[in-house]
Length: 285
Image (cartoon, rainbow, N blue to C red; front, side, top):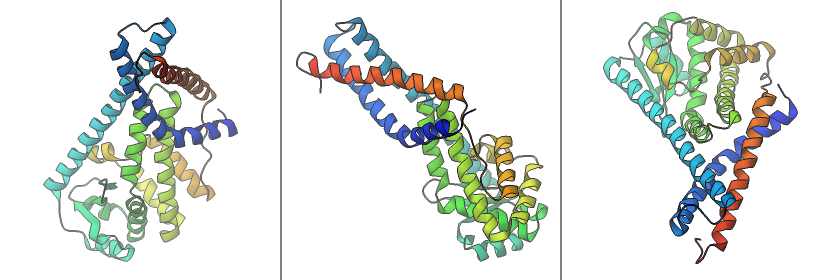
């Protein structure tokens, strides 16, 4: 594991990853134009290898992002099917807590013994809870859970985290990319916990968190949840509640070095591809 260098690289990757995806896609279009203009292979083996690498990595990235998009769409359909088939009136204890928090207008309840709460929807997110939640938790714990979900709702976390997963899917061949996406989800969970603890208290939130963690997860809700690593997320959330501050998250040295090496090779190929476009007969740009 690593500390300051790993965190600095992760922060840089988190900022640059969306921009890198756009630039990579543009260079892949350029690589396609270069092959169309000159045929395959290009004048030198280095040129051919560089342009082929740019194009192949972009195709792999597109496939990775498409897989993420398909999974997200499938999870969304399953969640909305659950809402259509099992919607029911809001229990009084949930309605009172939601009204106090100002989120009653964008709250849905479904029947079922499973106890859960999740924020769903990309543009105008809503909060979905189960009837089982009202039976499993106390009134204070319900308020803590709703305050947590309200933070996700206010910050439009479903949309933000989907964008992070799509970018990480594009760079799936970088060992650090999935880690960065996972950290984005964990940071939002920790931020929502801090907001909920400010409203209901750390002890109440901890009680609700541990109760829900001990219960079976609803498959449709688990698929739609932003937190992909449930056990690691739970450990970090409990650690924050105990210590009063977020736990330190570190990137393994092996992932750091492998990602840096892969990015260096790909960056060199991209530069070669861009330079080649300027010297081809007639130009490509």
